[in-house]
Image (cartoon, rainbow, N blue to C red; front, side, top):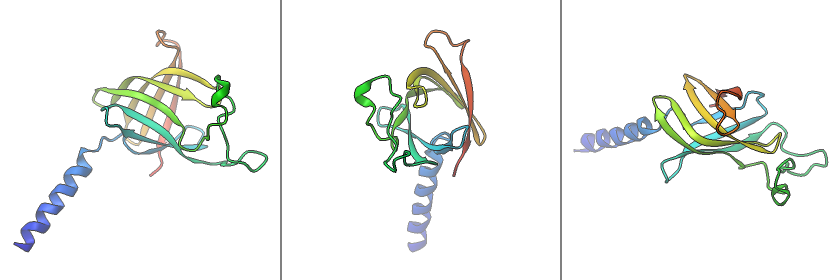
Length: 143
C-alpha cells in the first residue's frame, strides 16, 4: 500500500511537470540584461514579467523604474516584476500570437509573436497590423 501511494504521488508530480508548456520558464533577453519569466495565467493566456536585472539600480543607487514609458504617470513603476509580455495565445505547436510586447528601452508597446525553438524563443515585435515589418529578438533559456 505504501509503495502504491508513493507511485501515485510520483505520477501526479510528473504529470504536473509535463503539463507545463515549454515556454513557461525563465528566459534571458537578447542582450542578457534581464530575465523574463513567462507563465500561463488563469485566463489561459501567456504573460511575461521581468524577474532579474543585470543593473538593478539606477546611477543614483535607487531601484530602476520605467523611466521611458510613454505614459508619464507610469514612469515611477519599478522595472522588477514589470509585465512586458501580455495576452499571448497558443496558436499552434510552439507558436504564441495575438499578444503585446512592451519595450522598456523605447517605452513603446508592439504586437508580437513568440516562437519556441528548443532552448530559444524568437520574439517578433511589430506595429499592429503590419506584421511584415518588425524586429526579431532571440531569447535564451536562463534556467
